[in-house]
Length: 342
Image (cartoon, rainbow, N blue to C red):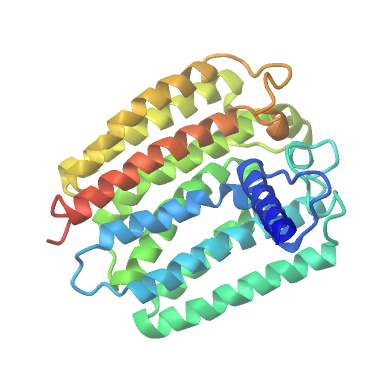
């Protein structure tokens, strides 16, 4: 009994560490750990937050259906997983991902690490997309053709992010891709599934959060500049140069707060979401690191598993901390402050 309990705790500890860093402990080969690594589930909280925002914006709506919202929430989580699987496959096939490229350095690469074969990765992507297709069909029957528009737009943008012929990341459009996917498509689409309608106000309300998601990608692309330039990958940070890209990322972080305030003034967000100003303390902490170049080596054991990423984890840290405050503000607005529909 004691041994079984210890083994159970060990597995949970392994999953927690893998979810936190994207890197499994040495020798961890169980199915759950492998799936966390394969789908890059460490960044799944970004999508969970998008679903939560959609839910809290829908509280009090006269036609809200929480079953449909739940199906859509599962759908965007599966879509995020499929996106990561397809991106790794496309980047491997086009020669972008190699053993000395950051994708294979900050976490085990599904194919290059030997964790799964190319055929296995294709199969996994097909299965996840098939599950998403089933959800899309169910929600389309319930809510109508806009579900197809949201789902196909998300799929095409996810596929085109790295796959030929568009390869949006390679031509400086990957950042815009993320802005659209984590805002209007994820938040807006999940909101539509739950309520049966979409407004320009909801689209506007989705943008401050999706801008935070873009800051994480900007940080990642800043970290990869030295690797991307020789490969001809022209991300926004490559086009701007590192110094200006760091300044632009800082501006995006700050714009989140102004965006929330503007949406509150316009009536698109409930007033308690102004509590995000508490996150300015976290922004000040992260801000200072964006003023300075990336260090030559990881400064501590916490950053070592993520190396050579530096700015991306900093931006993700800010996103996670302020997201909790944002969600809490939305919840207070929905259940105490009157929300948007009471």
